[in-house]
Image 1 (tube, rainbow, N blue to C red):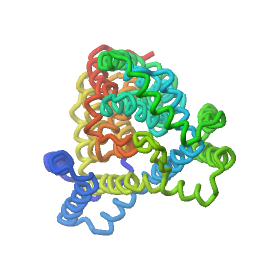
Image 2 (image 1 turned 180 degrees about the horizontal axis):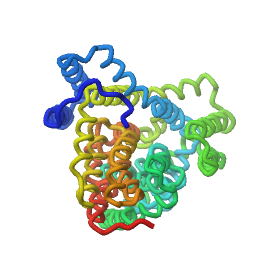
Image 3 (image 1 turned 60 degrees about the horizontal axis):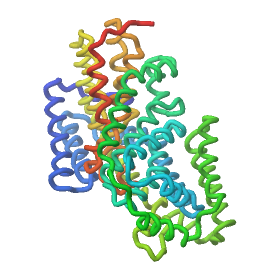
Length: 455
């Protein structure tokens, strides 16, 4: 059931107390002391190592647990490094500047946040990846928000809401495929059943962003200043759209994410040498350190100065620490103890669905990894749903409603760290405005009270 075999079997009371202590420690450092999340997670690792040694778990077993936890995220780590290259290559090929410039031509002030949410959701469904959506169209929208003097927090909340709606409902999404596979539900039955909770969450979110959107059109001069500066860098050409087209084609043909990003980045890099006449030595430096804007308009410089492998190292280091921390939670038996105890107590439909949602959220908070929240919760509750006569599609829906969309709301999670780094807006800043992510588990819990029957 669990990816790492526990070496200790603590009581449920002991596990809950440790859970509260660790969450309290991390929360205090991040919220009260405003430290980077690396510090409290490293302290949490020290605490778990001390606990494990006190319980006579060998350091070798503890170390193997950390390594196994970190190893589970290696695929994501390689993707993060490649996304750093993608952003920098899309900058020098003019793809991101072209997206921003196009956005300025269709977006004024009115309905801005609602349009950001809707467009990001459409792109998210097309690409099947919340992180790719955020790193591409999301970066462009953040630039527009700066130009329109809109709230960066609300804009980031709209981007995250749209990206994770798309990730959740796309048949190309890895989390959507994972949730349906884990509990053995047909992919399109899973997506259809998710619409029962996802569409209401989408409608409410769209209305909220419409209400919050500026009610006055932004003066054209503000937009013209940005467009003039973008033209000044001379990066935008008709070929600038080709890397985006390649990425879309790759997703249509279900190419692996790494291959899709690699092809798009490679094409963007080649185009930069042809259309923008960049030397190869300069390009390789930009691949690592990112692109630096050099216009006479500082806001555009801030917008264009992004990307590079180096920009992802903060994220990569935190992902390794967080997943190693998660490995220790398994090897010490804390998470297995809590999940096993839950299996013995649940009988009613509403309590089962509430507990499923709480478990998926709890794994996200403790480990910071959405794949594990789906896998562990799915494996734990499958037998409970079968005994209660609930169809598996109810479980797969709940896994996504409370697992997939919660990860970007956790400051030390894989998605949270990545999004905060790429958008330049902290998780706690955009969290109150990520309406879709906040509404999804609430709606699934309310909907859980309605009788479910097997088809």
